[in-house]
Length: 217
Image (cartoon, rainbow, N blue to C red; front, side, top):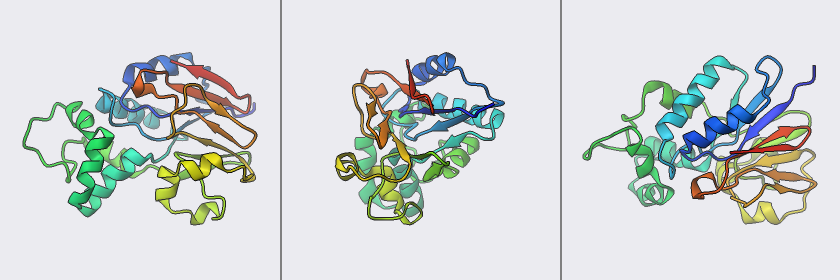
């Protein structure tokens, strides 16, 4: 039986939409693969519950792929570097909503990530910069047409936008990505964008491959 892939767009703490979306997917754990495209935290109200759910899915489905989004990357970079210059960008990203979802009181320190349960921290540390098979490349934000995939800096993979969206370059495989929100999924001959602004009042989207069937919640 052919493996189908279900790729899920940017969740951003929208746990209820995630549950509804997963209920709508005709996903067969024994045959199919789940790929989460990154940005699980920030902005929405339930980042803690989203990570709880994803950790459970990972335990139950060891072949599940979870990619690094720019929101996870920035939080982990601050954890690693303790660089205060990153704090305004974290707040702009909506990290306060993530912290509040763990019922933290005032006066804690963000940098050690001590508010995260160990399983959540280990999940974030395990996130992949990209994943590919014979037909597709899965990445959070996009690629640089001038650089081989394995040599592309993670900041590009997590954060690139305009240069990737505007290029007509054929990367040899169709690129499935998130990061840039669209009202409806973006579909071209070389790429599919599945961030549909779940935390902005729009829907959460998944795509079934290779059929290119879309599901929303």
